[in-house]
Length: 197
Image 1: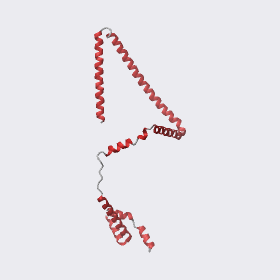
Image 2: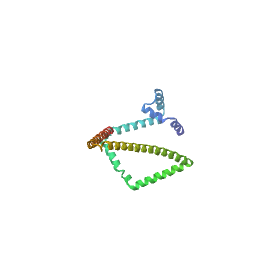
Image 3: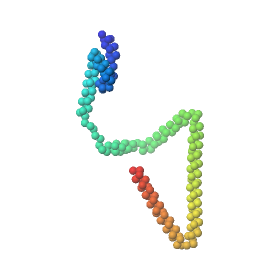
Protein backbone atom coordinates (compact mmCIF):
# COMPACT_ATOMS: atom_id res chain seq x y z
CA UNK A 1 0.00 0.00 0.00
CA UNK A 2 2.91 2.36 0.70
CA UNK A 3 4.31 1.92 -2.81
CA UNK A 4 0.91 2.77 -4.28
CA UNK A 5 0.72 5.95 -2.21
CA UNK A 6 4.29 6.92 -3.22
CA UNK A 7 3.45 6.46 -6.91
CA UNK A 8 0.27 8.50 -6.43
CA UNK A 9 2.22 11.33 -4.74
CA UNK A 10 4.72 11.34 -7.61
CA UNK A 11 1.85 11.55 -10.09
CA UNK A 12 0.30 14.52 -8.20
CA UNK A 13 1.65 17.94 -9.09
CA UNK A 14 2.25 20.46 -6.33
CA UNK A 15 2.70 23.18 -8.95
CA UNK A 16 -0.91 22.67 -10.09
CA UNK A 17 -2.09 23.03 -6.48
CA UNK A 18 -0.15 26.29 -6.11
CA UNK A 19 -1.59 27.56 -9.39
CA UNK A 20 -5.07 26.56 -8.16
CA UNK A 21 -4.59 28.56 -4.95
CA UNK A 22 -3.36 31.57 -6.95
CA UNK A 23 -6.28 31.29 -9.39
CA UNK A 24 -4.02 30.72 -12.40
CA UNK A 25 -5.64 27.52 -13.74
CA UNK A 26 -8.03 27.41 -16.67
CA UNK A 27 -11.66 26.37 -15.85
CA UNK A 28 -11.12 22.93 -17.41
CA UNK A 29 -7.91 22.29 -15.39
CA UNK A 30 -9.57 23.64 -12.26
CA UNK A 31 -12.46 21.16 -12.52
CA UNK A 32 -10.04 18.30 -13.19
CA UNK A 33 -7.94 19.24 -10.12
CA UNK A 34 -11.03 19.52 -7.90
CA UNK A 35 -12.09 16.02 -8.96
CA UNK A 36 -8.57 14.78 -8.17
CA UNK A 37 -8.63 16.53 -4.76
CA UNK A 38 -11.88 14.73 -3.90
CA UNK A 39 -10.16 11.37 -4.47
CA UNK A 40 -6.58 12.12 -3.28
CA UNK A 41 -6.10 12.79 0.44
CA UNK A 42 -2.45 13.83 0.16
CA UNK A 43 -3.24 16.52 -2.43
CA UNK A 44 -6.16 17.75 -0.31
CA UNK A 45 -3.79 18.00 2.68
CA UNK A 46 -1.25 19.87 0.51
CA UNK A 47 -3.98 22.30 -0.59
CA UNK A 48 -4.94 22.96 3.04
CA UNK A 49 -1.27 23.53 3.98
CA UNK A 50 -0.80 26.07 1.18
CA UNK A 51 -3.99 27.89 2.18
CA UNK A 52 -2.80 28.04 5.82
CA UNK A 53 0.58 29.39 4.68
CA UNK A 54 -1.06 32.15 2.65
CA UNK A 55 -3.33 33.08 5.57
CA UNK A 56 -0.33 33.25 7.91
CA UNK A 57 1.53 35.49 5.45
CA UNK A 58 -1.48 37.77 5.06
CA UNK A 59 -1.87 38.00 8.84
CA UNK A 60 1.80 38.84 9.40
CA UNK A 61 1.81 41.50 6.69
CA UNK A 62 -1.33 43.20 8.02
CA UNK A 63 0.25 43.88 11.42
CA UNK A 64 3.32 45.60 10.02
CA UNK A 65 3.25 49.36 9.76
CA UNK A 66 4.76 50.97 6.70
CA UNK A 67 8.29 52.16 7.32
CA UNK A 68 8.83 55.72 6.10
CA UNK A 69 12.26 57.02 5.23
CA UNK A 70 13.28 60.49 6.40
CA UNK A 71 13.03 63.15 3.69
CA UNK A 72 16.82 63.73 3.54
CA UNK A 73 17.71 60.01 3.59
CA UNK A 74 19.54 60.07 0.23
CA UNK A 75 21.67 63.06 1.25
CA UNK A 76 22.65 61.44 4.56
CA UNK A 77 23.61 58.17 2.89
CA UNK A 78 25.62 60.00 0.22
CA UNK A 79 27.47 62.10 2.80
CA UNK A 80 28.33 59.06 4.92
CA UNK A 81 29.45 57.09 1.87
CA UNK A 82 31.73 59.92 0.74
CA UNK A 83 33.25 60.30 4.20
CA UNK A 84 33.90 56.56 4.51
CA UNK A 85 35.99 56.55 1.31
CA UNK A 86 38.84 58.23 3.18
CA UNK A 87 41.10 55.20 2.62
CA UNK A 88 41.46 56.07 -1.05
CA UNK A 89 43.08 59.38 -0.16
CA UNK A 90 46.09 57.76 1.49
CA UNK A 91 49.31 57.57 -0.59
CA UNK A 92 49.63 53.84 0.04
CA UNK A 93 46.25 53.26 -1.57
CA UNK A 94 47.33 55.19 -4.64
CA UNK A 95 50.55 53.18 -4.79
CA UNK A 96 48.60 49.91 -4.50
CA UNK A 97 46.18 51.03 -7.23
CA UNK A 98 49.10 51.95 -9.51
CA UNK A 99 50.71 48.58 -8.82
CA UNK A 100 47.49 46.72 -9.64
CA UNK A 101 47.01 48.68 -12.88
CA UNK A 102 50.59 47.90 -13.89
CA UNK A 103 50.06 44.20 -13.19
CA UNK A 104 46.85 44.22 -15.24
CA UNK A 105 48.67 45.95 -18.10
CA UNK A 106 51.35 43.26 -18.07
CA UNK A 107 48.69 40.53 -18.07
CA UNK A 108 47.02 42.17 -21.06
CA UNK A 109 50.34 42.46 -22.90
CA UNK A 110 51.13 38.79 -22.29
CA UNK A 111 47.54 37.86 -23.12
CA UNK A 112 47.84 39.35 -26.59
CA UNK A 113 50.87 37.19 -27.27
CA UNK A 114 52.02 37.65 -30.86
CA UNK A 115 49.41 40.35 -31.44
CA UNK A 116 51.04 42.67 -28.90
CA UNK A 117 53.39 44.23 -31.43
CA UNK A 118 50.60 45.07 -33.87
CA UNK A 119 48.46 46.48 -31.03
CA UNK A 120 51.29 48.76 -29.89
CA UNK A 121 51.96 49.81 -33.48
CA UNK A 122 48.32 50.84 -33.93
CA UNK A 123 48.40 52.79 -30.66
CA UNK A 124 51.68 54.40 -31.75
CA UNK A 125 50.17 55.46 -35.07
CA UNK A 126 47.14 56.91 -33.29
CA UNK A 127 49.28 58.95 -30.88
CA UNK A 128 51.50 60.08 -33.75
CA UNK A 129 48.48 61.41 -35.63
CA UNK A 130 47.11 63.13 -32.51
CA UNK A 131 50.47 64.80 -31.83
CA UNK A 132 50.75 65.86 -35.47
CA UNK A 133 47.34 67.56 -35.38
CA UNK A 134 48.14 69.15 -31.99
CA UNK A 135 51.45 70.44 -33.36
CA UNK A 136 49.73 71.89 -36.41
CA UNK A 137 47.13 73.67 -34.24
CA UNK A 138 49.87 74.97 -31.93
CA UNK A 139 51.89 76.35 -34.86
CA UNK A 140 48.75 77.91 -36.35
CA UNK A 141 47.93 79.70 -33.07
CA UNK A 142 51.55 80.84 -32.73
CA UNK A 143 51.61 82.17 -36.31
CA UNK A 144 48.32 84.03 -35.79
CA UNK A 145 49.64 85.59 -32.56
CA UNK A 146 52.86 86.67 -34.29
CA UNK A 147 50.87 88.18 -37.19
CA UNK A 148 48.63 90.12 -34.81
CA UNK A 149 51.66 91.36 -32.88
CA UNK A 150 53.38 92.54 -36.09
CA UNK A 151 50.23 94.33 -37.29
CA UNK A 152 49.63 96.01 -33.92
CA UNK A 153 53.27 97.03 -33.66
CA UNK A 154 53.34 98.53 -37.14
CA UNK A 155 50.06 100.40 -36.51
CA UNK A 156 51.24 101.68 -33.15
CA UNK A 157 54.61 102.74 -34.56
CA UNK A 158 52.93 104.72 -37.33
CA UNK A 159 50.23 106.44 -35.27
CA UNK A 160 51.44 106.53 -31.69
CA UNK A 161 54.82 108.10 -32.28
CA UNK A 162 53.34 110.78 -34.49
CA UNK A 163 50.72 111.96 -31.99
CA UNK A 164 50.51 111.84 -28.19
CA UNK A 165 46.71 112.25 -28.29
CA UNK A 166 46.40 109.17 -30.46
CA UNK A 167 48.43 107.19 -27.91
CA UNK A 168 45.90 108.08 -25.22
CA UNK A 169 43.04 107.21 -27.56
CA UNK A 170 44.50 103.76 -28.40
CA UNK A 171 45.16 103.05 -24.72
CA UNK A 172 41.58 104.08 -23.86
CA UNK A 173 40.10 101.83 -26.57
CA UNK A 174 42.26 98.95 -25.37
CA UNK A 175 41.15 99.44 -21.75
CA UNK A 176 37.44 99.71 -22.64
CA UNK A 177 37.59 96.65 -24.89
CA UNK A 178 39.36 94.66 -22.12
CA UNK A 179 36.66 95.61 -19.59
CA UNK A 180 33.83 94.79 -22.02
CA UNK A 181 35.41 91.47 -22.94
CA UNK A 182 35.88 90.47 -19.29
CA UNK A 183 32.25 91.36 -18.47
CA UNK A 184 31.08 89.34 -21.48
CA UNK A 185 33.11 86.32 -20.35
CA UNK A 186 31.75 86.72 -16.78
CA UNK A 187 28.15 86.73 -18.04
CA UNK A 188 28.85 83.74 -20.27
CA UNK A 189 30.33 81.73 -17.36
CA UNK A 190 27.34 82.64 -15.13
CA UNK A 191 24.92 81.57 -17.85
CA UNK A 192 26.74 78.23 -18.18
CA UNK A 193 26.65 77.69 -14.39
CA UNK A 194 22.92 78.43 -14.22
CA UNK A 195 22.28 76.16 -17.23
CA UNK A 196 24.19 73.25 -15.60
CA UNK A 197 22.35 73.71 -12.29
